[in-house]
Amino acid sequence: MEGSNIKERAIRGIVSCAVKSYASGFSTRHLAEVNDENGVINMKIHNVFIAALGPEIQYYSALARSLDSSLGNMLECMAINIAALNYEVSQHVEGTLYREQTDFIAELLEQYKRNTNRRIPALSDYKGISKMVGTAETKRHESDYYLYDNETGMNYLIELKIGGDLDNKKARSEKEALLEQYCILTNRLGEEKVKLLFATAYNRYGEGNPWNQGRVRQFFCEEELCISRDFWNLICKLENGYDIVIDEYKKNAHYINEALSEIKSAYLTND
Picture (cartoon, helix red, strand yellow):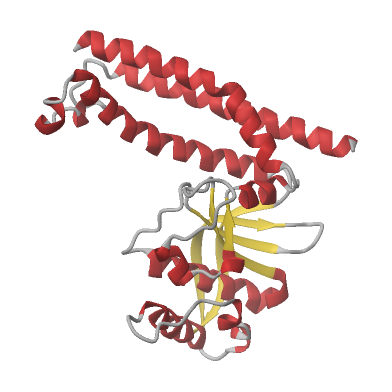
């Protein structure tokens, strides 16, 4: 029990520090750019069609884009720091990959993309892929999260999309990269010690609701989805990890609101 309490305090400390640091940095950056025509907000407020709706709409439209992007980056870094409490964390995979494996992956992904007779993703699709050996090459992949659990020996390859959006043009290539990383690891460790996951920081359909985004479902099966609560519980290595993260975030969210108020006053007054 004491160990869980220590871990919870550490997680809360990371979340609190991340939110405060983000709020301070976001405010400092945008306040410094008030009179800079090339500033992040000023570069986006010259859309005449938005400007016609009034200065407040113009400002909020520009700020929302900046907030959404930078907040996502903060959450990614925060998640890595939390994961480091429980796992060995790396952001690249390097090792032996066989030509026969890359050929198999390419064909499999084409089957997922077909308009007719489309193959539905399943874990069994790539079972035994580590035995497809032949022409070898050494390859390195950058990874969102490669986590190694010292206690269980399990390796996790995670593709994290904060809100779950999977770009139509990149969906295939991102699953391809994950499968190649999977091969690199399983060639050395065995398939039973490696899991491949598509993760999100929150559920865009509402917490607890089914994840139904078609582009994700086209390339990832149910067992590969690690959505919202499941993701935070995994990296926190606690059954209530999600609840701890969200609770601490809400306790510190006022720092971001205060920063937004400062920015609003500066830009709308300046306008």
